[in-house]
Image 1 (tube, one colour):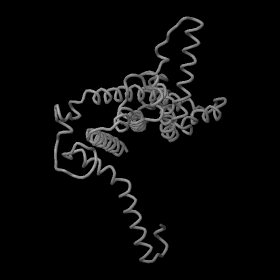
Image 2 (tube, rainbow, N blue to C red):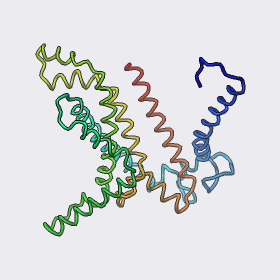
Image 3 (tube, helix red, strand yellow):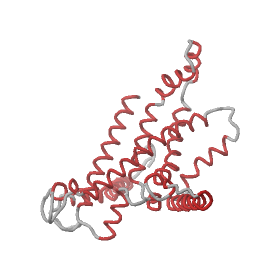
Image 4 (cartoon, rainbow, N blue to C red):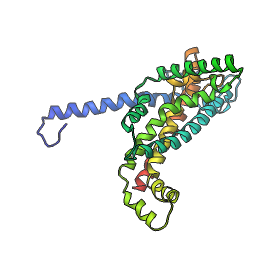
Length: 284
């Protein structure tokens, strides 16, 4: 709606109604999930049967809360461990890639940039299947020709890290590059003229300027890794991540503990987003 143009009362009413319905559609399922996490029922659905903390704190044997559910706690730890490793490597490689693409005299710059963006447009299912087939093929080749049994090529933790890293790094490259384009190169030249070496300039000036984008892209990389399902589904081994574990529970039938997990994830991701937003505004 263009505010400077005249509009009727009915148009304004319909526009506001659309906004209200849109946000209801967006947040109502999340709100219902959070409410059902405290429902005193053995099923993860309505009707409401009273308030209860059993799905968080119950020790069993009839009910087991999330804080005493070893299976779900293990999958949460696997997801956190995977997200930390993926976000670390994505930040390092993505920042180096952003520096590379900002070089003026860099041959094949556009072609490599398009290849870097390719993982973002490839469906996660295709990406997961491709990495799985490639790793299996390479593993079979090494075993048949050299007798090497490379466990890293089998479905498991490191293959999940590789699969998520392949597309999350692209996001870091885009965010850091956007920040780097606004950087005043005369600051680096001044530091070099004052006697600083290249590494000191990068550490004390360039990276400090990039700090907001590094924090923001690192936080988003962590969240993207933590909640990834499509790619991870084909690469996971005997230790599933939390999204895979939740999928298996929902498919086979589960208790409202999945609502409790969803509630904790919503609180965690919202808190992380608010912290990131606070520090970004504070830096600006």
